[in-house]
Image 1 (tube, one colour):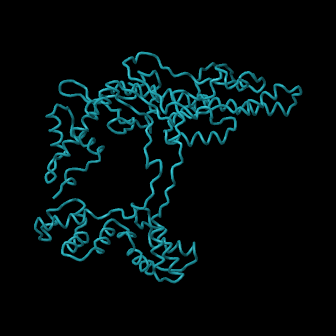
Image 2 (tube, helix red, strand yellow):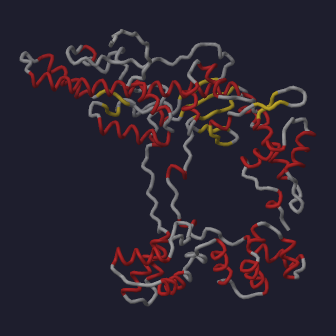
Image 3 (cartoon, one colour):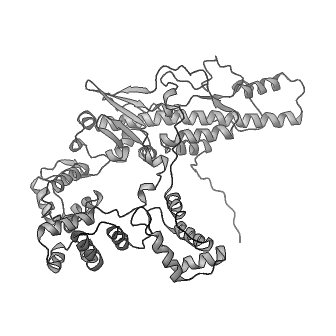
Length: 497
């Protein structure tokens, strides 16, 4: 028999406004302006404020203090009523001079940032493939061969390698351009393309790329020895079995060193010089600035995080016109609901931007206070062990919120520009029982490796012993993990002549 029952559950869900705030929070300064432009295009009720064009300052400054016991100053986003049945016109008819409006977003702490709003000049550059096509025009090829050469050049990667199989290129020409060709014809045209600049382009492997560069060099005994090594002893070379190669070729130390120097100065990615990096990857725009003002640390938030936004006065005027209208038909009510929706969306977005700024500053203030010694001295060994939960406890924020702030955000200090994640690290216990940051251990490990004799580099076992002699209780596998995180190869690959 079917039995029916009632249950009451308490569920917690994120509102659309909270979701919007979380998305804005994790956007770095470099992409925030683009996100605001998208919102301005989608919502005509949102517009830039023109009142603050002569704003006083570019950044918001906060001084360092040791009081971290206070509660977060971050205010909750005010959520408007979405009910379409009743519209409170007073919420939208406030004037710009009304102190309680709060939506004409021009903060005295932020300037207009005119210098940062100037349009950057567009770089006009010749791409790698354009460079190859220009050289192709200097070859005397018939129309058919020219089309095949263009297909080959189009298959070359940005780093200069041809990683597409010849049979696949033959199929591409047959199906795409109705050109019937074969492997021998492709290889013949490929050899002519491999004579283009920069040397080494069009190779299938690194070995072939280096050989192409060596064969373009002026003939000498050193170059001939280098070609022989690349041709016959390539595997031994990449594994740095130099002793074996030297014995096989019967070369003395000086000549062998000259040969190796020729090889290691070759370009493993000949096309990389023409690669245009993505703008977001080419430039780092700091989200925060930390200054040392006579021993007092001050934080400044990048002015681009404080856009001057407001609710459109034109949309407010539409609301006034509806309020003055005596005839309120169905079409006018539908228009009113549309206007209200856009006004609500504009207010929510402005509130989210404002709360984003408070969250960023509040979190950075806690990080600066926790790592105060580093920001004063720049000494990496002064970094304390710090995890996301430590900052979440200080700021009364959720760990996920702190994680969003720390992700893709940068701070500029007197000692360089750092990613916020740089300041987070686990703890490692010393022989004396003191907890130190793993960042400190990595710094000392890097110093030891930098100072080692490159002819006889330290093994991981020896590095472990040296760190233990300095009082760090660490295992060999941990040293190997830290070495890999520092992008340092094993001892055999660090060996130099």
